[in-house]
Image (cartoon, rainbow, N blue to C red; front, side, top):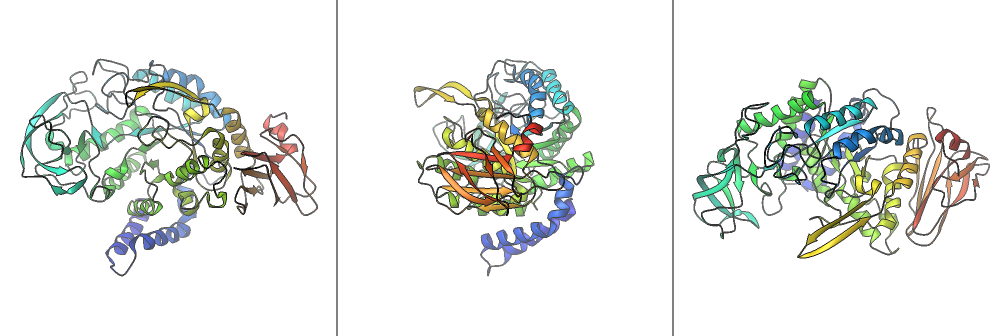
Length: 548
């Protein structure tokens, strides 16, 4: 697939070199036209076989998941129920060793220590031991669930020693502005991995493997991003702060041949040793996009198959997402952060959000083939740095959107499915957070997704509060469906489902009275205020195993 995407990349680069063009608009138009003309070929490669398949991803952790070491054991036990519910893939937390037993996984110390070696005061990680991890992955595969490994390649933390070397200070707010001359600094850049030794990899990390740090022990009060001697900030990254290559810790220099080789080695090892089916890439807006093209191509060549890869380029600017998708040749999917933000704003608007605009400026609307849609995640949940939670009352509406529409690959958040209850300090105060479980309704939506979310989609996004759509089914999945939601008063709308004189019931149970279509396959559908109703054919309920 690499050669197919390389042609797109060259077209995008040509657009960027033409001063007569508005680069953002031109890139969006080019990418949409290109994907439309290659959709059949790309879709066929993404699936093992060309068949009707409504895949559903779940992020199987949140930031404050229990740190008792039982996460992998719980997953092994839960895998059959997840598969039965309709989950086809899981995004698992970073499995490598961090700085302590409480590390969520993004404070990465040793990518090759999956809870096997005594390092940083612990053998197990927050989630359990390596053996438990491998058993959980195997349990998922046995029930047909794919596993996506979280890839943290932007930085390393929790080094074993400091090293002295030459570096130049740059303004943290403007990485194009130097704050002085190159000088000797001392920074935490030495990674020995004493507990693991040479097992799985013999590489030890030194200052020259990193292009920047943000702390100099020889001058700890000088606030700067210290660019390593002989290194430059990477190109093809987000342009916030002038150049957003540096984010935190010891920033990996992916242009260094030893770093590049080690990250490829880890990827191949993860495919072979763990059995991952794909990857979620962390913080890609801070890493040169060209690196991932090379990395993914190497892994796919080794695996002799196309791998699912989704990148976290967290921005609410949809043009930036188009640029990244085009610059990586459409080679990876991207999280639909703008859709999340629309959900967040709608949930905070008290019924005064214009629901006709709910999909505006989103990947679901503009780039559905590469969109991984979500409601919340571990970064947007309460007390996190990107906190922008979708309020509980609106979450059923949001999940109906991502699970029951034709566009995008939906991702369910662990805390929304199971609920969450945690206490954490922020700004010197203790905060208890309780997130309710939406499992009942999500499971009902998954049933509708598995049985009825197929075929032509008719949209009725025509009212400031009440919007809906219908799915007409296919020969392989003939059941039709109508979805209606309102962020204000109770909603009602005439919509067509293509089935004459057919009785429908609200799968959510919100409305008890049935609805029967007329001779033209139309009916007036209803939903409660501030809620959603999913209407399916009454005859399909027995197949779904549902009694209303």
